[in-house]
Amino acid sequence: MDETLSLKVVEGGERLDKYITRVRPELTRSHVQRLIEQGCVTANGQVAKSGQKLRAGDEVAIVLPPPAPTGLEAEPIPLTVVYEDADLLVVDKPAGMAVHPAPGHPRGTLVNALLAHIPDLEGINGSLRPGIVHRLDKDTSGLMVVAKNGRAHEGLAAQFKKRTLKKQYLALVHGRLSPAEGAIEAPVGRDPAHRQRMAVVEDGREARTGYRVLRSVEKYSLLEVSPASGRTHQIRVHLSAIGHPVVGDRLYGGKTSLLERQFLHASYLAFEHPISGKYLEFRSALPGDLEAVLERIL
Picture 1 (cartoon, helix red, strand yellow):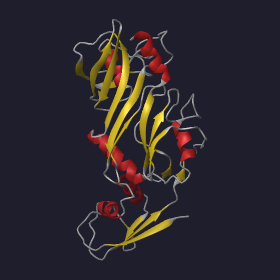
Picture 2 (cartoon, one colour):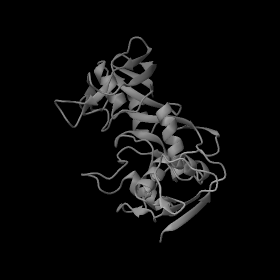
Picture 3 (tube, helix red, strand yellow):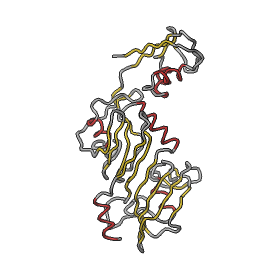
Picture 4 (cartoon, helix red, strand yellow):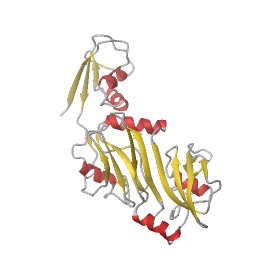
C-alpha cells in the first residue's frame, strides 16, 4: 500500500529535490529525483519538478510506493558478522562466495544470505535489496560493509566516491618487488582482446594501487595493498601489469600448486559511520588456507 508524506515549507527559496532530502534524510537524492520523475511528488496539488523553487507555505506531498521486490531469494546461509547496528553491518566474506547472483551462480551468494539475515530490511532507493556498496571478487575473502537503509547506503557511497573510506588487502605475489614500497598508477578497462578480463588500457578509468612489501623470499612477496580507487579486478590487474601477479590468480597469473584460489584477502576496513559519524575500524586475520601457504613458503 502506498504511503504519503505531507510537508509544509517554512522557508522558501530552496529547490524541491534538495528540500525533500534535507527534511526527510532517509530518502536519498537519487530516489527523490526518481519519485519526482514518476509524478509521485506534488507541490500545492500540482505535479512538481526537481528544480522548481519552493515558497514559504507551499504544501508538498510525496507518494511512496511500497518497495519493489527484487525476485532474489533469501537463503539461510551462515555469515560471519563482524559488526552490526540498525544502519549497517560488516561481514567477513569467505572465498568462493559470490556477492551477487549471476549466470553460473544464481544461489548461495552474499546477497541471498543477507536477505535472510535482515528480515526487516528497508527498501533502498525503492527496492527491497541489501545495500551492497562495494564488492569483492568471488575468490577474494575478507571484510565488506553493507548498508541496511537508503540513508546509510548514500553516506557510505559518498565516502567511497571521496576515497575517505580506507581498505587494505594482503596479497601474495610472484617475485620480489623493487622498490619495496610504492604505487601503481595506470588506467584500467575492459581487455579488448579478452572481454571477460580487465587490463591496463589507454582509454580505461584512472586507478591507483599503493603497496608495501611485508615479507619476501626468493620467489614470493607478501604485500599490504591499498587501492585508492575501486576498479573491477584493479589489484589483480595492476600487480600482473608490473610482472608480479597474485599467486593463484588463474585469470591474470596462471595456476599454482600452492592453493586453489588467488591469495588476496581484504584485511582492513575503516570508515565514518554514515549516521552517527563515529569512526569505525575493522581487521580480519588471514583465513586458514592462506595462512597455510605462508607457513609453507616463508
